[in-house]
Length: 230
Ligand SMILES: NC(=O)c1ccc[n+]([C@@H]2O[C@H](COP(=O)([O-])OP(=O)(O)OC[C@H]3O[C@@H](n4cnc5c(N)ncnc54)[C@H](OP(=O)(O)O)[C@@H]3O)[C@@H](O)[C@H]2O)c1
Image (cartoon, rainbow, N blue to C red; front, side, top):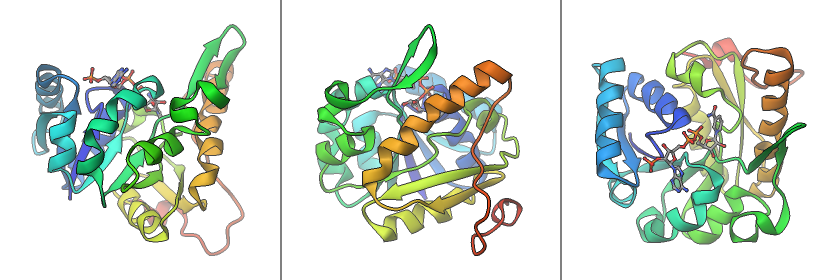
């Protein structure tokens, strides 16, 4: 599949790019600048010579893609999404964006009117700004460094979105991340919970060291993480 990653130059974007390219997908590395996209694609090729990486500016990347991933800081959503709304119509658009603030006492989830498009989540804002896109929340709580290194993640990916069909497609795609299991967490209304949990993960990393991920236990009919991983 041809996957565009907006902010494919960043930490999480490059991690997802490497893992999905290693699984055989064509990655369109999106950026606000063609030069930064070129540089990032060069670095990705050095890390994974067999990978297929095509650098483009974000809007061209949206046009070229079959599926897109929004991997930019939350503050950029209101500027970035509107020019690509037409190109994203009918496509699955995964958002990994978390609205977080960092204070003396740790990371906290941003709430209310400060959020793009008035919130209540980054995912809602993207859906509002690209109304014909099939917005799905996924990968929000995964550690970028582990993805870049293609480590076995041993992590659950919580997926939510309006369209069940789109959620199922993202759940299937997640099998291409090493050691990740995707779980259907329901409608887009719960996006703010998944996004906000990243603040907890960051605080636990700081308190205890390491790279925490989420794991849900007690689900009888869900695949196990090892079964879901390739
Ligand atoms: N890092 C993690 O471990 C991690 C884990 C889970 C989820 N996330 C989420 O993933 C998203 C990306 O995280 P990251 O750590 O990869 O961030 P990042 O490295 O700071 O930024 C990613 C890319 O976004 C673009 N960007 C920066 N500011 C922007 C703006 N105002 N408008 C549009 N584009 C902008 C930049 O690309 P160009 O300059 O090339 O356009 C940058 O390389 C965030 O929303 C974060 O909450 C991160």
